[in-house]
Length: 178
Image (cartoon, rainbow, N blue to C red; front, side, top):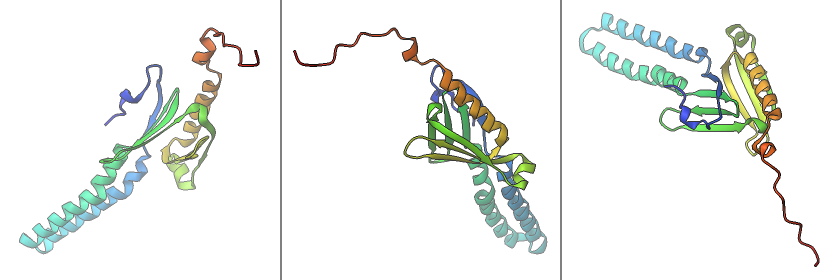
């Protein structure tokens, strides 16, 4: 499932569209291999009906430990545009957050040695507002993403606004004594 372009404004362009790093799928793949080994072992040891029960239980376990995390990974979007940072996530119930570039105060990243070796990390976006931080965990290419976001914020600060382009309107004089 791609990111819906319909949520963008007419002048807005997607600069970077990311999903969480693939390492989020390592544990589910490990579970798939473990469950498959258990089901095959059940067929070899018990054969017939015992293996059928084990197979049904294994299928249910696979749906829970492998398919659901994959769907969560697949439906999580981190989108950086010329106007804002958007997040969208959730399989059945959706959650989203938008932060206009003008509200971003600070962008920082962190990654452990393992995350560094795999090319992922955590990006923290500080914004002015009630909710404050946006933490994007397991983000691929976190250092490059921080640089791109910094460049977007700087470009947004120097971009002329519609008010700058509009002709000055005459305002009525302030009320005062007559």
